[in-house]
Length: 202
Image (cartoon, rainbow, N blue to C red; front, side, top):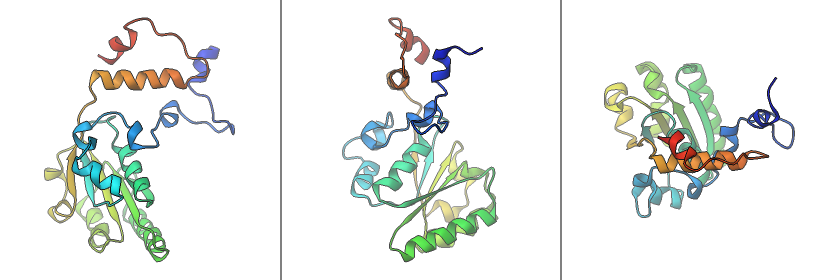
């Protein structure tokens, strides 16, 4: 039987719906985003674009768990844009067309749309070509996430219309910050022994 403490990791929200701890910890502002200071530090091009709410199509290239999806969500929020998400593993041309229809409807109301495609390197050429015209005409602001070098995985037409940002593995002190937030988010947070979080983050 699970202990009361372990149940807290899987607690629901105040309304009773299940929400994983990782989702509860997702930052709601760039100020709360951990890591990627080489992209989000003061005066950096990406930070400046997001601060102004002026988005462009882009690719986030980096290892798993560094904040690609979260950064895409924050980018859309910064521009007050509709956020649509597809997984290249699970989605096909029909899903892309559905996203385009939703983007056209939003555009008619005067709102931009960010289409975030996770693991975009898994889309074949036909799937990439399906939304390329709508990236070109501004119907979609494309943000792709990939763990693979986009120069080898994406067709040149799409790659030429998106700026590539390389995300880095989180440093140990950044992982410690996330661990501290995770503990603090628990209803009855346990006390970590001195140095325990540093050892976990190594």
